[in-house]
Amino acid sequence: MDKSTRSDLTDTVGDDALMGIAEMCETFDVSARTLRFYETKGLLMPRRLNGTRVYSKIDRARLARILRAKNLGMPLSEIKAYLDMYGDHGEGRVQQLTYVIETTDAAIRDLEAKRAEIDTSLHELRLINQQSRQALDAKRSKTRDKV
Picture (tube, rainbow, N blue to C red):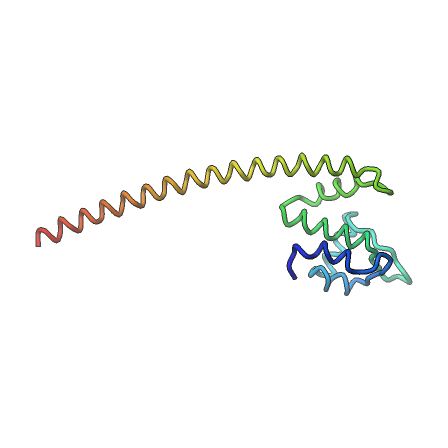
């Protein structure tokens, strides 16, 4: 499944529809072990009906956010801190958005710096490659001229 569509899945299932662990695994392309691990880390808190884990729309939205952040390289401890900012009724949404803006600004700066380093390295490698080709051509020409 395309990772970019995972968050869309939370909107296509009814607001009050509950999913079992097998459905969550299939929908988000994760293992049951992964879901249980996220639960032990406090990232997911599914309700239990007769001992069976059931996931609400909120759980699905949290999992979509967890997977997106994980794909961006965010450690689980930071993901948990971000999710915990939300609060019980969304009172921390401004704090969450501020955190996202600051974090993504820093990541963009880092990636742009890396891209600049890569561009510099590519330029140097192309120059070395070109000079080496010219030197090789010159050596080959001298060898042909002697023969």
